[in-house]
Length: 309
Ligand code: CP
Figure 1 (cartoon, protein in one colour):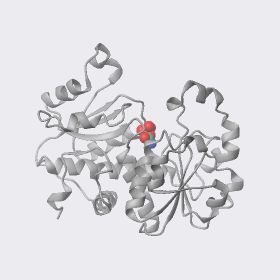
Figure 2 (tube, protein in one colour; figure 1 turned 180 degrees about the vertical axis):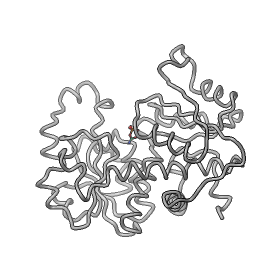
Figure 3 (cartoon, protein in one colour; figure 1 turned 45 degrees about the horizontal axis):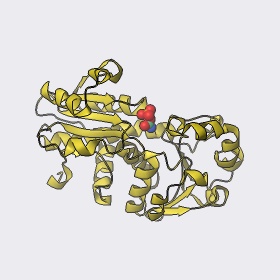
């Protein structure tokens, strides 16, 4: 029985989720993975509105929608009336007007969803597929599911988040939730890419000193698209790989049983040696597999709120 506290009109950030709430979503995602079937009370419709590029989040939400028995509306931002200057609100309201129940949105603006969800006239459910460098709740929850599946709990686990911390919505969401779930969070990477806001969740340290003690090594993609022109010009991929990349030498120093994670897309040879992407203790493709089930659980929350499940 799902408690009424665990149904939500929108899933836009992990900031308003406590540990119990996240574990509830992880449990339902695991149930879906092990064969639980969804039953809808009427036909339901989803639209995936992506205003930033995506492979995983967009297709994974589509797959989750299809597995739940929802109909999926086609939408391409590049050929939509957004190009004529239509606002995000008007685009989302249009989806609602034509009968869409849930909009999954990825947008470059941090917290774009705040304006939408406080709008009294908007009844459509919103699932955040990533906002700027703010939040990536579905990625966070699929990462938590992958860790939970591996270790069975979070208490006392040592998790290192390494790389482009300041530009990463994954770093911000994961650090916050790992801390709430009782993990010990550590950060490493270029000092200029550290974000002081992260200090409330964990400790910044030296990659090579931290690595052998870690249970989870959560690599982050270098987000070239979010670097300033000067930062991009100065970025040296080979140097980064030597200083902060998971090389074969570092891989051999990892603790027995420790796992490698990366939200992908991977810059092979930069954050990680290309040969290690599918190493025995890499969970990078498992994360993608788990993403479908996590997104089924997220959508289920909204469908229950709407009385469609
Ligand atoms: N991890 C992730 O969000 O990937 P995409 O940008 O391909 O969706």
